[in-house]
Length: 449
Image (cartoon, rainbow, N blue to C red):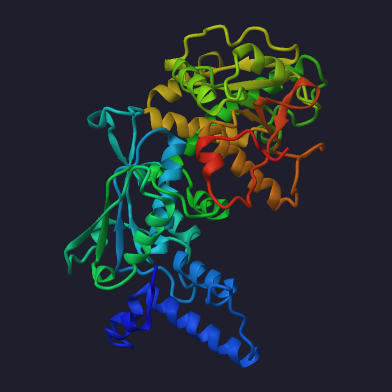
């Protein structure tokens, strides 16, 4: 994108022009070049006649982020389409909308999520307000200075709404998409109170941000108390079952029957068992298209590989996170290795908790149950599994663990669709240095270990 000083001169220097991110970037670049000129009189030029790449990188980074000293503007907003599909597709779409708003230095108007799981029947998507699932104030508190979420009641309606139509098709490249966003940081468009993006679900937008930026947004998404309490009930049930199992094989320790901290230390395994009919159709097509065979896993393969995890503390419960309504195989509780007690919602006696809620909330409860597990096993081509692995990776990094390969760590994650050591599942840590969310959004068999 061409950014010239003449564009900045067209508006008052201390007035509206300071609201243009592009002009602010020009000023910062000019200042940096002046300082460079003073400290390094000889400036290197590339063969094409431009300033060396470091200056270009500075400008690129400036255009993709907000000056931390200025913060996110509270009087300029971005509106996006309703967010759809599975829970974690929706979380990714929401994070991408947040990062787009950040680039435009605008507050994101709280979008609607979708409570149901219809992919094509738009009229059946059942919108649900984001603050019915995640805590609004907590989000803004945790993400202060990075991104900001606003309500429609914050609008002053001083200007009309500018509609930004997202391009589509093969000709709409990632470079064209980025250039379009940059153009919308300048006057006169930047003067509109609201920019409304029209078109595709944000999950399908081009991705311009690194994994660490998405991870920051995900950290700010905290479930509302009602959903957290339901997840607490499920986890408590699982741990009680583990204690019951072990009481038959191990001596009861003092205080083992008391509630509280002792119960919280009882370990369990969670498996995101993707063998539902819709998934098997999808993964078979994906294997054919990508010409690889490490996506689909049969029930038998999952059971065998989970049983071969090295150092698994048994006896224990294996909680099976599975979409019961889409499951055609009722024998998932059979064939497990001795010492592993498989339980799904009905067998655990918690199906009544889930039935009270629409799909999205059910998925949020299962996500929390899997996230808290001592050992998690999932499929590296599932966004549900991938985001759990990402959050668990962050937990390990905060504990000082940078790799789980070949060592005993807390919060280990595994991918059962990829063969690991001793015929078990492959160890899994998210590559937090990735330049985009491609591997998490669409799956990968490159999972660090």
